[in-house]
Amino acid sequence: MDSLENKLNYKFNNKALLLNALTHSSYANEVRKGITSNERLEFLGDSVLSIIVSDYLFKNFPNMPEGELTKLRASLVCEKSLCGFSRSLDIGSYLKLGKGEDKGGGRERDSILADAFEAVLAAMYLDGGMEVARKHVLRFVLPELEHTDDEVFKDYKTALQEIIQRNPEESVTYILTDETGPDHNKQFTVEVHLNSNVIGSGRGKSKKQAEQMAAKQALHLMGADI
Image (cartoon, rainbow, N blue to C red; front, top):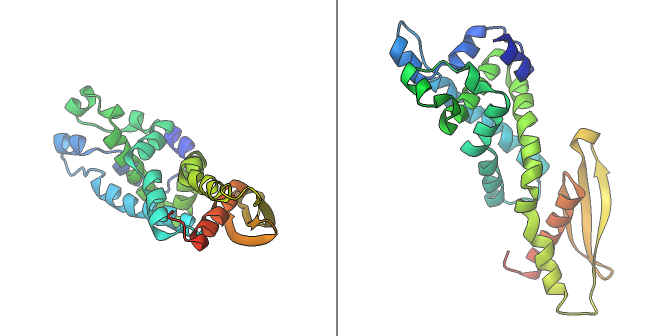
């Protein structure tokens, strides 16, 4: 347990919570003796994860519409992402599995690892509170968010450029107008200019994101189908 706590960067006050988070239903059903599985913790962890990611996206992507926020959140908390987080912590090695599940490769099964990540998160939330849980989640989600940026934002600047290129005399430039926040959580504001006229403005946690959001606003104002 100590080695897992080191990987989690968190020491539990109530270690029974962590033990419960690592107890799969196959083990609980096999051993019984009052042992409960991690399913209730998984249920709670799913909600804690959702509110932390939703809160971060809401605050850091102020120009992103609801539909895109939902899509981005879904990509960050999907089974593929969660089992990847779980593997990076080697949670599979610490799971209590029934003999059949263990022999059947349960320690490497995506669904079991994803559920265990949520259960451990819930245990951390119950033991240490929301800020402990938030720090844990963002440790994994922020790097994942960097990887998804290109997919999420790739179309807007290209789409705007294609429209502007229909008029060769027109030119688009992106100008950084504001930069706020500490180094680990910067916010950038960018304006997109058509010749000398501002046609859009956007904010993001990188200049690239801010530019894409500015391009998106410009496309929206032009009535483009985006």
